[in-house]
Length: 135
Image (cartoon, rainbow, N blue to C red; front, top):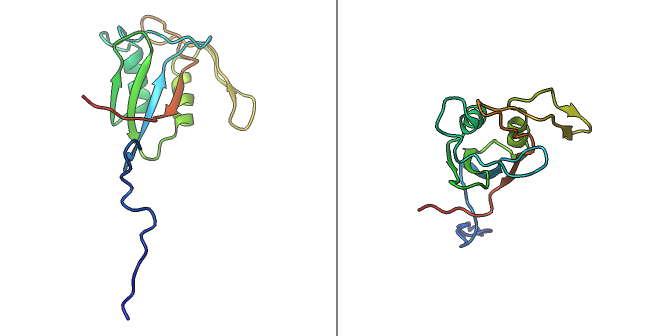
């Protein structure tokens, strides 16, 4: 008698599903304290501007900054990274004062002054990606 096996999930190659394998994909939306998207499309041409500050802090494997006023940065990160960790770290770049812990994993963030243009990015959100496209 030969031993058999049962395939449980097939090859995991379903159309419309992200399989980042040894990485994780995130959508970062750079926002200010009031939750309004910050236009970072011009924050990439001088040393220490907003995009560079974020990239230096989170060290992505790859990233893409939207060339518009949406504040979106598409990130490819190490597999051990979480959206909550990235969001917390970005919100503290250039903080005017230390974040105050108000719960187990809840913080109140102060305004930030990032780069030579003093951008406030303290309301930035990071979420797991739901799609992936390249051109």
